[in-house]
Image (cartoon, rainbow, N blue to C red):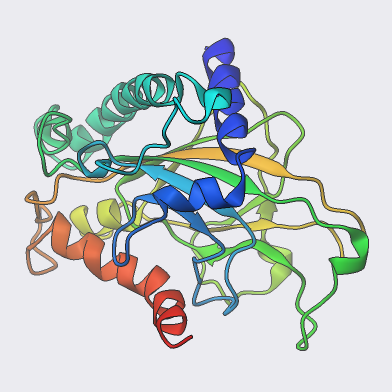
Length: 281
């Protein structure tokens, strides 16, 4: 419901209002897509890191990555509230995936069986994202004349994304059926409404469908150069198969591989450059 979504965004805002040094106590471990990260995600389409911070919650990987609520009473109830919302997202995602399973000729519960929330290899992830505000004086083009990108052009690498946005906090743009280098005029804005859920096919489902179901490029654009940029919050829920699930399309177009192998490959591509740079400093 709208109230549940608004409450989840309020929970997210309380989290990102914590001091940076507190957030760093639950920082993303190297090579893992879990916990808190700050400007560490690099898109091949842009080069510099995305202008955002985020907190990623895959249930089995959260040991030691929850903020101490006793020491930080401003986020009392954060873990319980986050996991409750994550569970509701999971059920919605599984219902949507039933339609894709039938479309591909699988049993209706095919994808539900490989997204087992009770498994230690479960890897669905709720991600809270905060795009920081920027003053007009800092909103300048890079040396190549490119604007600030809050999230550079990319496709999601999971099966299905459920994206929650907030009224008036727009910026998301999509370019279905094209590559990231296509002319900027081809990008289509997706207005942000709290009570409208955006669903997006990811690369894992594209591979699993033998390319019958297409993932699409999307990005989050900042305002025009030279103006103030307000902060923005969003929350994607990534349905991505359990790590031991075997990705094998109905027509056998691609060699089978496990979801874990696939995710590790894609996470390294998105975060590896930033981590390599950090390790040399």
